[in-house]
Length: 215
Image 1 (cartoon, rainbow, N blue to C red):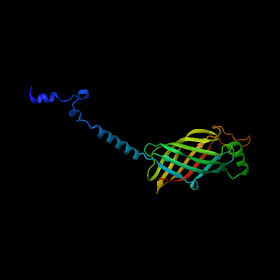
Image 2 (cartoon, rainbow, N blue to C red):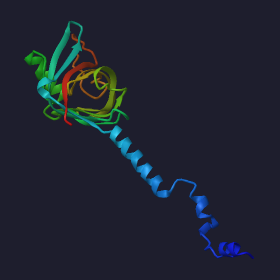
Image 3 (cartoon, rainbow, N blue to C red):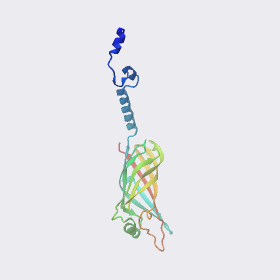
Image 4 (cartoon, rainbow, N blue to C red):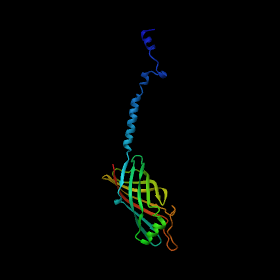
């Protein structure tokens, strides 16, 4: 046996029998971990939430209800609103809270009936929308057509809803117009129709709002 072969025979056996030089041909474990950490960090930066503060003073909540004689127009007031969304994944959270007791249509008698018998606003004073997903991409600048998915709470019950929205981004704020229908009779509220006056079984809602980027 030569001196070189005796030297090789004396090398300690590695676990699994693999030569460290052979294993070293792959990516060192510490380098793989570093690359994985950088990948996660980059994904985290790309998916940071945009936080929006919705201004009640610049928000208009309008409703229209058709009947056989004419169309009733009215408004609600927004109490507060905040929304977070991830432009990459579409994930969203937050809430928009409307003051149900603020509903008015320009007729004292009609509004009294609406609050007492339909909305029951003394018992259910808030109408709340909690978004959970933005369907479509919101552009950093310009106009986007998207849909907001989430849960709509009214008259003590929650309902899944998806509503179209036109969003215009620019100068650190978003202007949005959202439209949707509330099938209030189907959702358990009283039908205000009478023998001589028939009204629609749904009310159309349009929201115009301005939201500023919080960070």
